[in-house]
Amino acid sequence: MYVDDKSSMCRTPEIYLRTQDRAGPLGRFPMAGGLLVLTAAMGVGIFMATMFMWLPRI
Image (cartoon, helix red, strand yellow):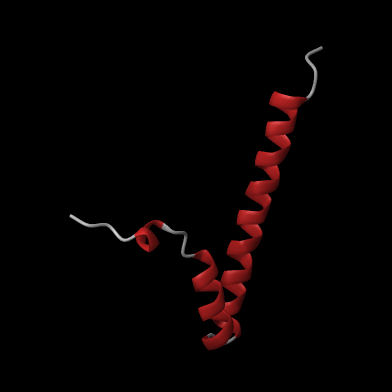
């Protein structure tokens, strides 16, 4: 079975662009909230990686 490389890609940018073009305020606020949650999760991950991998052990 052939699997297209594009099928495994993240769809977030496409959803963002589709929401930006077509949705009204009721569609844009949930998208903005989702991006905020993903950004916060990425920040927590970066902080945790810094704390556990790069800072010297005391």
